[in-house]
Length: 100
Image (cartoon, rainbow, N blue to C red):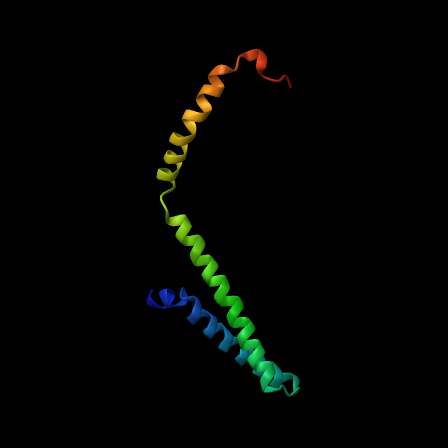
């Protein structure tokens, strides 16, 4: 459980995924026997870290929005819209409604 909480940290998740992607890139270069420069490893680390960190950050933001009690928000919206909509509905007669 503690490890999952650590992975919710977008900085740590970005660094761990960057390291993992560099390790996989090194394994790929060993298998294909194509030497890579250090700049390529740094680029892979930075790009993967930024992408994963941003995704974890955005997922955490959406989780925070989902934890807000939606019923209380719904009641607030309903109570604020009701005084505006009700007089309009009451003033309309059946002849004002369009025929479909």
